[in-house]
Image (cartoon, rainbow, N blue to C red):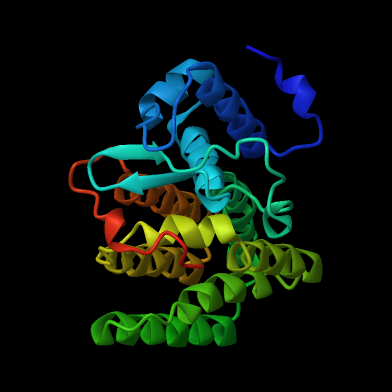
Amino acid sequence: MESFSMYKGLRRYQELAEELKLIIRKKGYQVGDRILTERQISETLNVGRSAAREAILMLEIEGLVEVKKGSGTYLISDELSAPKPLETADDVGPFELLQARQVVESNVAGLAALSVTKSDILRMRQALEMERKGIEEQNNDYSSDELFHRLIAEATQNSVLVDTVSELWKTRDRSLMWARLHERIFDTDYRKQWLRDHQEILSALQLKDSEGARRAMWQHLENVRDTLMELSDVDDPNFDGYLFNSSAG
């Protein structure tokens, strides 16, 4: 197996995607063939399931593979050496982004608990009420979720941290990989869990419990990661990703 050093300058998921292309070529897969499962890719490349999933997402966006319900991933193009789409050149893996947010936002929440004001709390409550109404109305507006996280950053009264958190969310919003991951998810009951998580974070902030706020935010983003992993599992026979147009943006 070639060393990842040959892919110097690429993001980790891009390195893995290139390594997966080598495996596809070496094994002689033809268009229409089912390639390795995510678990097999994880074991072959000695990486976690989230990293393997990001590599598959990259190949999906490049138009090389397609996922099918409870069946797995199939090769749909033999253009394995074609240049990558320019719009994906600087994209980030959704799970590495979540990990970065977990590290940053948990500590931001801990700091916010030390300086949060009554006005901050009131605005956070309004954001959660917007989130609750959105869930009840089953709309696709997730802006209140983002607003809640941004308000926590603002409560630190540190403009650098506000900009850092804002940039992480902007990165998510413009990520094709994040959008493609969510195309696989059709069960939105997880939004109720997010609201409960947010309420726990708010409770800790109200108590000015720095460690409690840090832990609550860390656990929230851990829950997000675990749920996205579970709901976007293409090898699960209950996965209904085939219902979505693979060309959708």
